[in-house]
Length: 136
Image (cartoon, rainbow, N blue to C red; front, side, top):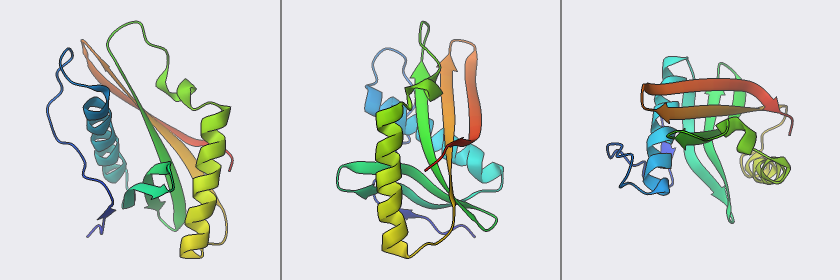
């Protein structure tokens, strides 16, 4: 059985293209990414793990490997690839919060950094998983 510690609630509202704010849509995308990861064999250990103002969307285990997952969502037409929004500054912040997580839980060894991109478009949704998306 998967044991999950949640620091913030995950929104389960339906998706409304016009009237729903970015936070709710992002929460919906994170929940979909989480469900996809669980079906793929990941164990979700923490959601939205925070250190100061920095956050790891999902802290997971895949077999014996720790995995930090950044979830990016895009909606509608005319957007760019969501995984491209993990720029140099975002990667730096993820490394910093990742180091805090390591110290807090006394983790040694490598931790993999993945990105899950969720794209909603009129025809449906697409979920893309980028393993080892960047080094930290």
